[in-house]
Image (tube, rainbow over all chains, first blue to last red; front, side):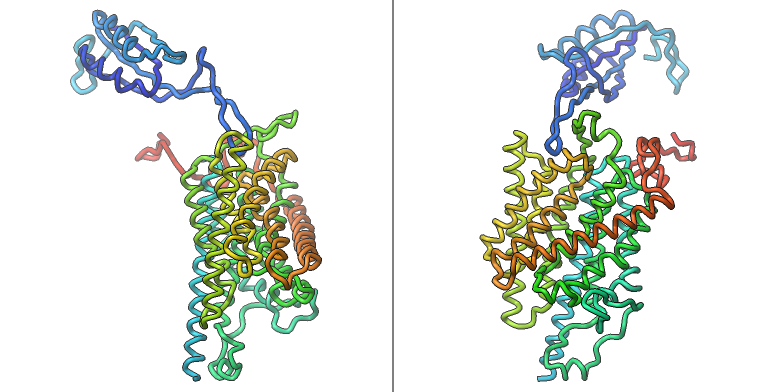
Length: 112
Length: 419
């Protein structure tokens, strides 16, 4: 099993969700996060004074899938979240030791 | 004829009371405006402050404030004397015998006046937001509403020496707004800026307010309440002349606010390149404060211009105060103080009874009196119990430090686990 973590632009969430559903992903965990990469922050204005917003809002997706589906998931996210502009985000892949479905006690690939 | 007199008395009293209710609702406006312009972690405390200061103002004004401001037979033009609690109301025979001189209930006058003192105190709460100890503020409210405000109120509206010298202030650009701002300024100078607001080299770090819809709602509520504030200050509505006057006051009050919004929005756009909503909101209030000293004699066009000048002034004033490192989270000192001064001076533009000398005398008297006495009271409070929360409490938010609760709790478990 693999854990695919993707940080993407918030407005791309719906597109990514749809393309993941199409390849058969059963579940996604989504978190609103803030951070910066090469895009850095941007400046805003309040009552005449500028300030730098260092951390931009992003969405973090966590998807645990069987080993054979991982490549497809990476490809789907890369395609759907791509705008070609700076700040599109990153994808990280980790190995997962175990998964358990709480309701039934199933484990491993069956629990996904 | 007696019945007509009684009916007019009833109508003017009713008008007075309804105007007072509108002004009372301004407390809600200040609460929402301030809640919108502070950070989320300081919301519950500023709401507590607003509701508590209103209650304290009502009690202190009943106990002694009203009697200082309207002493009946004063000791002198400077010192009204001190007495306690409200007297009885007018008897029917006295009203009929007065030939129209007594035309509203005494209690309605108290009710109308008490909401004004609460307004003055509300001005202070915004300026010292996010860092002052709750109870230090509330103790100051006792002195402000029981003594400081009523004294200068007596000098003008109670028939004291400012009134005798021809100082004009229709509904309180000076008596209410500048007075509140002067007390706020004294407090802010002793309190210092919010942590992180100013850098070591004088750079300004903005601390954006948490909720712009609430700030906008608060501004609209204040705008609405102002019709009672200025309209009610005509004191009478029961004949054609007075009814027309009241209508003109309503129109001028509204026009000044409109002028203030447009002028502040344009000024902000030209200065910053963006149309800062908070400046437009401050512009509305600036227009209202500017017209409050004389909403009756200007034409609606002049009222718009007076408000617009207030709107321009308030933007520059806010920037200047920031440069001086005077940290006022909601812009109260600029809106009510700087523009209040403009309002007092603007009286001479349309009212031929006004003189610039008398206006400046009133301005200086109210400013110096309120600032100096407030400063002394703040110093004493600072020495006895301190003015400021600790640095850690400020970081965590005064909601938790002072009220023990959050305005927007996110994790509350069903079993009190805190999760």
